[in-house]
Length: 84
Image 1 (tube, rainbow, N blue to C red):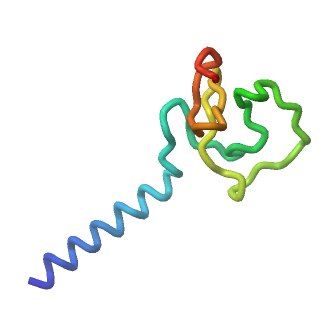
Image 2 (cartoon, one colour):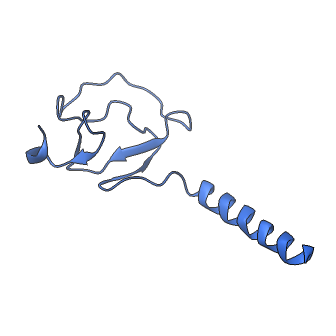
């Protein structure tokens, strides 16, 4: 009985490690990016002027795909005609 439980736990740990290595799961219209939300275009500021910064694992996160803007009210990535 303990062997199947140990195998199941080993499988769960392996699945968790695999998923963590791939980066975060991002919502619709966004993808994992090393710069994350740093200086990301938003509905309120579609063309931000950004200071030069080196992006690294500390800034990694979900970023809107090209052609989409972050709606800061909802947090979702939307097309410009969906901005409110």
